[in-house]
Length: 80
Image 1 (tube, helix red, strand yellow):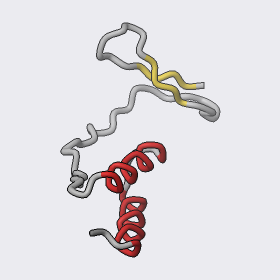
Image 2: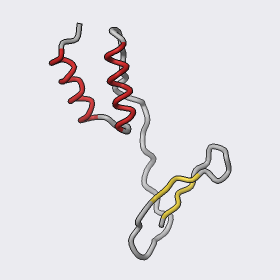
Image 3: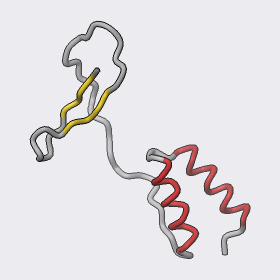
Image 4: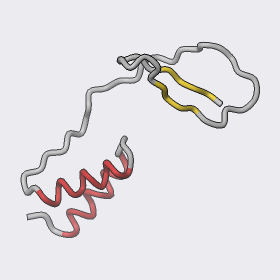
């Protein structure tokens, strides 16, 4: 049985290393609270690709938005 202290410490640890959005963190915490035998993976096995320079912009970037212009698994980035 998880004590309130265990739950608090678990949430603190999750927030320190969480790589998702806050809504996903809330869903994860609710999942752990609702399932006594809950399992939360600690590593997704994903890695970042090396940095690639595509060009140089003048001025400041105010926003960066991902776009899927083709409808398939190919994404673009829109900078403004």
